[in-house]
Image 1 (cartoon, rainbow, N blue to C red):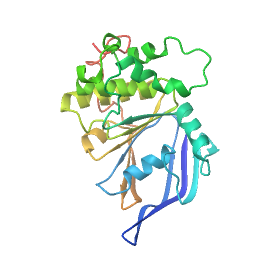
Image 2: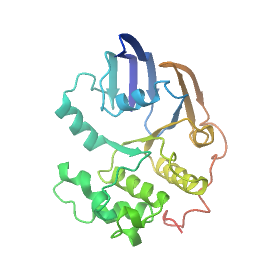
Image 3: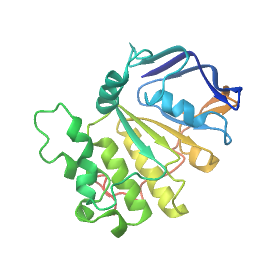
Length: 243
């Protein structure tokens, strides 16, 4: 799914060169659930932006589904993002005066699909929010807003979901529900990569990659463990929707 080969990214700040990423090598296979962790300023967000084609590395190669996307221009990168990548952010990024359903359907504006009928409601159904389809964000809880954002990320059926501190603005219970949602999506075959500084959140993933000062310092795979770290049984019904 993802392969970074000797990827580096530099910024100049106050005449000083900052190595946001330094010779990073990562391989993430289809269907993995990976947490990328590190302290503030470690390079997590730069790595996420690189993986999401929101930023381009200065050096190295980025292969996405065996396609070299390293040198893609803005239009090419936008097309790949719309087709293959779903984004979930800490701050939800929902249009405040727009109902949940319309927020979810926004990526369809740029979709090449011939028939988009019902896709918005289908995405909301996956996160258990069809009954809130016509509510604006201020009428939803923080956890519900994040689930709307996840539905929006799913609308074009992307192969890869990138989540940047997805529980950062949520209370513990809502955060647990969101992580259960990601776990459900992963169990259904989605590749999930999340950025977090919270080790309790990272523990839900099957693999943890640690980054410090732009360098990968550890890569721990827990996929052979016998049982999942977070049970979703209490949160979901037999159809995968929230109770």
